[in-house]
Every structure is written in structure tokens, then in C-alpha cells.
Length: 126
Image (cartoon, one colour):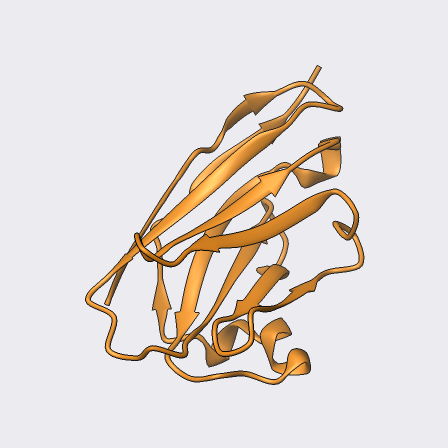
């Protein structure tokens, strides 16, 4: 399995970005995928997750109502639409995949995810 993340960049506070994560070599038709982020000097943290089996979506409290996770079934691509970006959203964003369904609480644990994209930098600055 390979994950290719893209879409990061520099944006002003209040702006929007859309991240993409293209998955190839999938061996499961019911994986769980997520977005994590890591700011300098901080641990990697969960941002949003999507369980393919039932299309349930999960969000960290800090981004709920501003970010939206989605997927394109045909292209095996996951997206993260980020609106009303704040300074504290600045981080390297990673997409990740676990090849089975996770319960909601397990999405918060990055150690459960087997595959990771290379990361894409999101910088929110005025």
C-alpha cells in the first residue's frame, strides 16, 4: 500500500485548503483512513478519520465544524477540506491507513495505522 499526500501550502487565517491522499495497492475493501498532523515540538495528533465500511467520519474537537473528510471511491482518494484555517492549524499533515475497520476511539491512536503518506506542509500565517 502506498499513500501520496498533496495539497498543502501557505494560507492566511480564515482561508481554505484541500488536502488529497491517493491510495494505491489496497488489499482491503474496508480500511480505515485518517489525517494526522504534527507541529514542531509536538506529538502527532489525530485530525479526522473515515471508516470505509459505513462511511462514518470522526473529527478532533479542534477541527470539528471547520474540516471535512471525504473520499472518492472510484479513485481511492481521500480528501480533507479545511476551512476557516487558524494559526494553530499550522503543521505537517499526514494521511494514514489501517486495513480494517476501527472503532471511533481507535482513530486517535496513530500507532494503529500501518501505512503513512509522506506528509504535506500546511502553514497558516498573515
